[in-house]
Length: 382
Image (cartoon, rainbow, N blue to C red):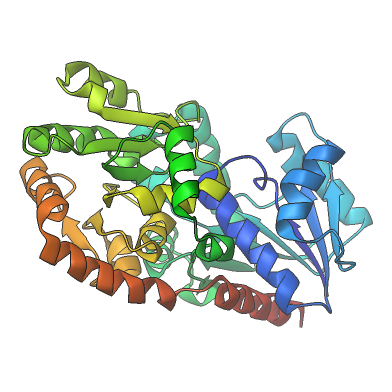
């Protein structure tokens, strides 16, 4: 088979959607040497391609993996003209992208799109109008054009079926997991302190890491932390992520201005992938207050580092964490504050969460995910 994969997000510090395709491609290099893979990107700088894409993916010496770099003025032109033009001249059997499928691609090319979540339908006020406009128009067309849809959770599959009236048989669920390099990374005490100094981390802290979009509910997290800070004077709050990214929640700064303890809320910025295992390992607990998630990889990352997890009680979190996390109502500040305090000080509860989490994260595997995706490729191509 000739398989094309859209890897435009790889190398661009895009958290979740980059992580998924990075790990799928990386594991495909281990399990499949028969098919030809064409990895499509809009990065044209050869040095960036080699250091940020080829080396991390491990494809420099893989003859069946080829980078196809296509330049375009913007992502709309890339998807609507540049890529389709290339595929008409150099067709593949299967083309795998995420969300928006390319326009005007020959019908003989089977299209797969991965949907991480459809939160924009339920929280439209949290999305920039320009982004929302394209999502509302192009996602229904993309789901119709796709020969197969991959959802990252059963929850996301159910949401797609309900909202877009898609036949469930057209959708396959392929769960995410924790990066293999993340799991293998076992930082020494010296390396832990190096990371602590690099990001100016406090001695003891509760951690959130991810995007800072409004649906992540970070103002709520800051308020809840402020409610109990006087009882936990030695614990600070670290919110890691890129503050300059699109759809940053402006209410974060509004809430901080009203906080008496804003000096105890630390923003270390974007965390390099190689430093993330140490960041989690240094954390006293991990908090995930999101209102809506398609999956939630950081929950499993925290569990793999033996860190107690406190997470909002939403369907996708239940699917991922099972009985291995402590849940709170993401709309009830009193409930959240109480449980945030409990997980911070109750050693019996913390030990129980650690034990359960250490088993739970092993239920998910990128190798299994890649094998499932490969089966989908093979079925479509046949």
